[in-house]
Image (tube, rainbow, N blue to C red; front, side, top):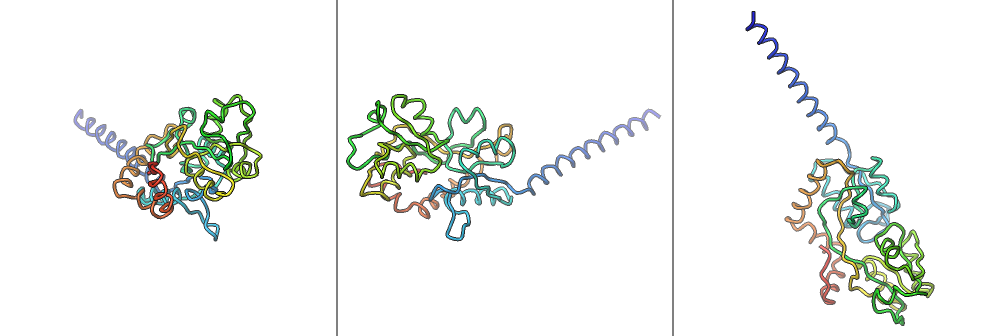
Length: 269
């Protein structure tokens, strides 16, 4: 009788364990079957942008699709304003942020980040005839500075340029035009963008490309999602090992890569 009872309880326990295991496996399988929703602002060429047909393209878009292939998951890209990305991640509207986002201590209070995938820094766009030679010249009374809303350059201006007149715009192109038209003395933004704007408006502007603040970009992840963070970091290591970043640099930034080399600046990846 005792032996029969023991066997009954043993079978019952094994059955419960099997059900639990199958439940966990089915949950994991269901999650893997769902599209991975990635948020980005498609207004930042050549990293996140749209092609003439309106389709997402650029460095970040290719990186997102490579991540999907690595994880065997479909990718859905949600285009939204940059300042809306972290709120969307926190509320679960999106699963990840791949949008040239700098990993900062302030942002880490709200979200987690992957390992860095790109190194950059903040630079300055000024008028061609400007006397400004560096950030010290910007941090003076009466200097008119423009920044893009929600960026680390806006944070820097808030914290360090307390004597300057700082104005924020939602579009980086609007910031650049303020300098081109002589309405602003300086535009603070990331190094590559400043280089691009200085090249585009070479008759009116010049770029001070030596970064006054070094930064790195990473993939934004909702807090508590340690499993996805581990998968993303494994992907980044594999992508780098297989020269994926080199290929992206050659595809989208080949001329800029060569220009940076001539100027003596280390390139992004």
